Length: 210
Image (cartoon, rainbow, N blue to C red; front, side):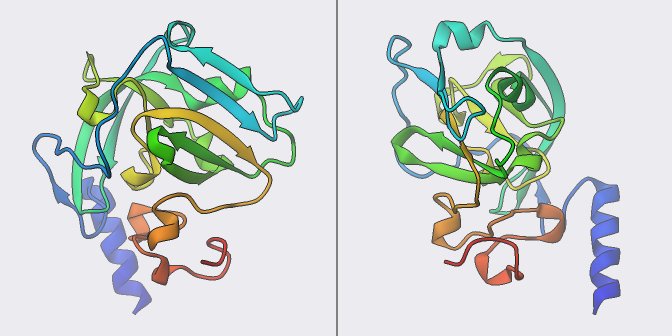
């Protein structure tokens, strides 16, 4: 049983599509709840929790927009089985945020918080991956409100629900804790190449008990 699965993963990686995914032309809008209204004078991005000095760090929209800008070319894989390949994402690398607001040595995970209390948990290693980026742009254009303006997290090597729209902050954690969809039956890790879609697929050590 293991050999066919491994072969399927290798073939999917060569084609650019994780197993079970289909190529999507265009970019469908998928999210839970209403689209928030952006008000620049009230917007704030904050890093809190187990920071190295115990203090939180905050940026208003103007200051966050002035942080070093980078671009990556990366795919987006939705758990609903569509994949969008080769998009250019522009924004602030997650590593930059960690450099500006370092976590305590004991931090193992982060919780990314977004509007309306939405959250997604990530292992610190996934958050620090080279292509994890707080995106403000796609293909050279500002994100639309429906796609997460002013800020969404893109974690190309995980399913897209791990990269929330309308991000407002990051919490450093010294132990794992499930986010919004992870509490509602989605896999705690969310690796599309292993089709980690749902919590019933989890193996011991993949996440906290539901």
